[in-house]
Amino acid sequence: MCPQFFLLVAAKKNLRLQQVVTAIGIVLFIAKLFAWWLTGSVAILTDALESTVNVVAGLIGVYSLYVSAKPKDKDHPYGHGKAEFISAAVEGTLITVAGFVIIYEAINNLIHPHTIQKLDYGIILVAATAIVNYIVGAICINTGKKNNSLVLVSSGKHLQTDTYSTAGIIVGLALIYFFKYPWIDSAVAMLFAFIIMFTGYKIVRTSIAGIMDEADETLIQKMVDLLNNNRRENWIDLHNLRIIQYGSTLHVDCHLTVPWYLNMREAHDEIDALTNLVTKEFGEGMEFFVHTDGCLDFSCPLCSKHDCPVRKHPFERKVEWTLENIISNQKHQL
Image (cartoon, rainbow, N blue to C red; front, side, top):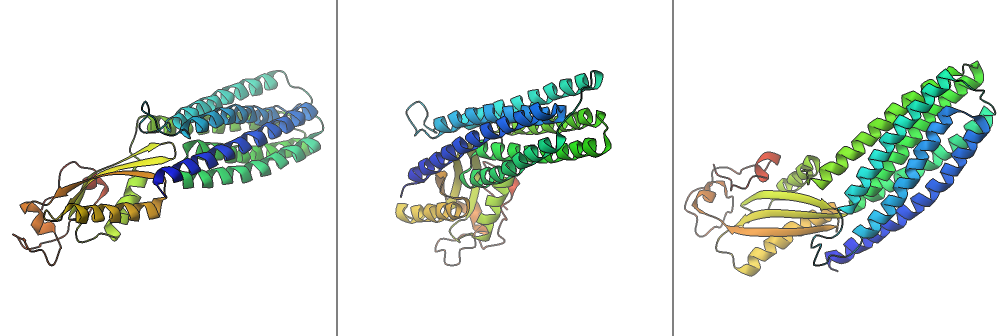
């Protein structure tokens, strides 16, 4: 089947999962609001406000995945995947704003303290939401990495961060419950407000990197290692490697140097071997634009092909492809 079919299937799976995540987020938000109403705890309000962000960001994520799942058209030849980066940027911004609101509420509670009640029920409710959040977040991250979806990965990390902050809030609530120190409520809220704001900053930073097509060095290095370890003798050189992400699609461009005397079919076989190798490792959600170059005289010293009928210089050593030299637009020379 064509790669476009797999891309559309992955995009639809991402959309369905995000819809489920958003529905769960609404239920958990209502549960946390109820826990806040029972207890009056500003720390629980912190959790509820972050869940508000979960719901809003989830709805934005559903729309962005709906847009990114659309097939290519004449106005969007690379597809609509950039919508995911915009969604992640909005989500990160909302998380950061929620952090400032939480700090304000915590300071106000210190100045004007109020009685906290029914903490035992509040702790049980919040703990239950934390468990659900962690499980859903893990599913989002795993699916997002598999399908190259920034929206799902961002949502998953946000949900798991929500779990960690909820766990800290539960510890703070337990201290209030056993030791009767009401100021702990505001202290815990402020501590996790800063954690939430840092999470928001990281999500915004990642989304901006995607919008600006910033190179993913970790991904490129993994691909370089794969190519080095499975190098064919007709792959004399590889350079000008670029990887751009559009939603769940990875676009890979590169120049592959092969023996100049190969006919078009033989050269295409080498391209097929390259693309099949990478697709097997990184999944079907990839598109390739591989340009073939014929070798030149200066390629002989680094070419290890044993039965080359037109060799002009003896083989000296193979050039190891690295992150630095494989992205260069220059052919390698000794």
